[in-house]
Length: 380
Image (tube, rainbow, N blue to C red; front, side, top):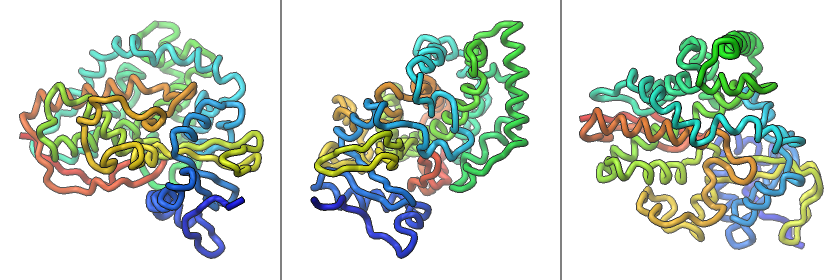
């Protein structure tokens, strides 16, 4: 039995140093080595780790919740994401059923007007950095959707700021900041429970642990949406033929394909896994990569090229996973799409054209995948 292929290692550190320095290059090397041997490769990250990117691997990992457990995955090391429905294994379906309704498509429509009004407080004019503008716009839209814009904007910015930094910054505990944020959310939740409301906090506060779910989903939704919006603006500035109302949805989908915010997902094995003649031991870290799956030349034509027209057809099954898949499909799917569509539609209202001036759109991996930036464009 041949061992799984793996990228080149460094003495003593295995792949850890390369993972912390340039994980995208490491993933590309692993994918190239495994393209003809099952699209599964090994990494040495301090414990046994296996990365797969085929549709078959993605489907198995995302649907076999008994074998692939969330507890002990990468999310657990980031205090912002360590808890709630994201990491729940036992009782996940029940918990998901309780939390899911406020994030449904119909519920999102009730928030559209409030999100639209908040967005219009961040009008881009002249020359602007799309990344900085997207950051401010998404903060306003999230505040409107979750808290009717009642949360102190300075606190919201300070709370989410560490997530924008490279590791290990997002994993560093910040007990005082979390205490302040939790107290503020508890105060707002009590007001919703006694005085009513129609924002996300009002709905979540009625469930046990719902305020915590609000805090976690808020953290999960900020950078993911910010980065997608910034890249979409940059692509529209480079491809003006798509800067039109009937092209925005395809642009969003193509941006999410090229740069899925959740570029890497992880699970831990609760039992040994037999896969293509290999046995992966219990407790191993198993990973799937929406980034690699969406750039697989066996599944996509010219996978590295921005081509929104490819969305005239359905994507290959289990190869387009910007929001995950299966029972753990991202709760914020509809909210993210609503904010992205509203923001790009707003740009159409205030600008007749966009022009890319200068910037660095290269992907920079952290908790989420984001552009190195800045992305300076001119609105005409």
